Image (tube, rainbow, N blue to C red; front, top):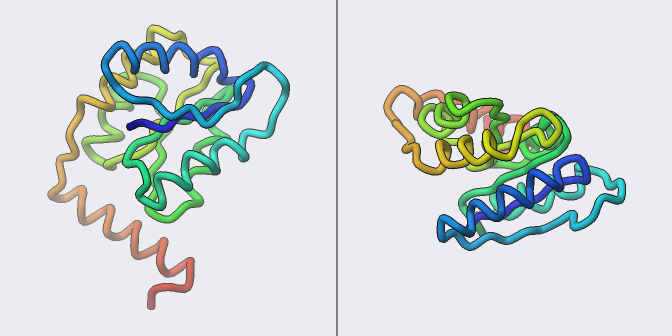
Length: 151
């Protein structure tokens, strides 16, 4: 299961990505938006990030006009590693080095074809662990400290 959400600026790209995912055999949970009316991206970023943060789904995709706003929102949630990707290399590295559980795309800055290639690269990549895990552990410690959970 992959959860996906967008604002109005990412709607068209979201629909293209959903079609691609379904053709690849993935089950997709679309949490909105569903039309071109102007909406606030934090509302949809929160829906996806909360599901990933709680462990209800392991992977999510967020899309807004540039991907910047959705990245900011999603990374407020504990355990979420949302990575903005603008090409296939970034999408692959987001998984291999950062174990990104949400990939973020810009609906107004990339084509449906490039988005499909980026999503495929992210889904096919495997987290490398090793020295990268030490770095993620540091991020987790920071996250816990800021939340008042750590020392």
